[in-house]
Length: 423
Figure (cartoon, rainbow, N blue to C red):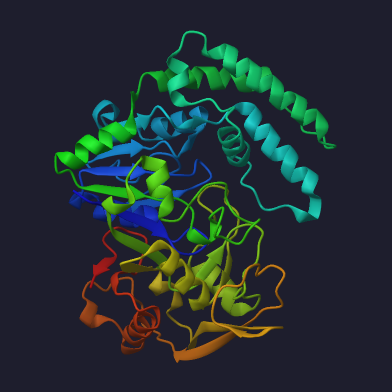
């Protein structure tokens, strides 16, 4: 049985959590393959809003098993807070949640290093979420990291102490002051590790191989967005993991030839949290209007998201590198009321007109070139039938579908799972 893959095609915050929640009823296993608690997946249903950071977005469905894969980095403290927040929902985590033994742990000192590194950059800071993600992946690739499976060993704290001391030595090399009480941080950390031990820790790649052979349907869930990919994103303003389709192979142990459909999610406009280049960013009333109507604040950090028109140059690039087979458009309702909708189709640069993403859009003198489409005034949030969409909104969908040469199969017109229409 092949594995389907769902990921974001912009700078994150596209609405992946909602769509995973909507699709979960069609799958047996939801498997998260990269990132850490720097991601925030927001789900809304039955009048309640839920924000998940580490736990896969299928956790509210009674029949689906949720797997945190080896490519994920886990902060035990944040993880246990998520578990506590889900207590009112009577979820049987012993049967519904599995954790890969090969996933790496975020230590308290990883967060301190993250804060020190960002502070030392001054004005050149990259907009880290300060969750310790980067330092944890650095230890992983440097072969110093501590994995979930390590906490099962009786002497695992010896390894912890050695790595922590290395981090403290590194902190001393930064010419910045970071206030912290390591003993206090460690008290909460070790308590959370003890709780983490009680969960079902598995050899996740073996579990998925057996699941495939037995005919289970698997959906791989990505975090962040393709333009934050460590290799193909807007480097260095990126995350520390592979957010593109390739990350599902390395983050779950799934073979490339086992991936079937790749679902690419994008907003009807564009947003970005934190620092980094954003060619279509708006600094006028239109941008402020998008932010207000779309409630554009980061689910993890609470930071205001920067808003702009949709960028087809970047979107085509992400569709190509991911091999996207189906598109899902989110937040079309936010654009209601705009007289004109702008679509970036190319960049004007010092080297001429570019219709592809250049090596470094941060250093390029880029001016977005737009096509303009007529907007619509109708409220979309109560619409339950595709035929009832305003003509100009239908035309916008068709325009994007033709320009991107990929079918748009889902259109979202609000945050609730019911505000999701299949085409």
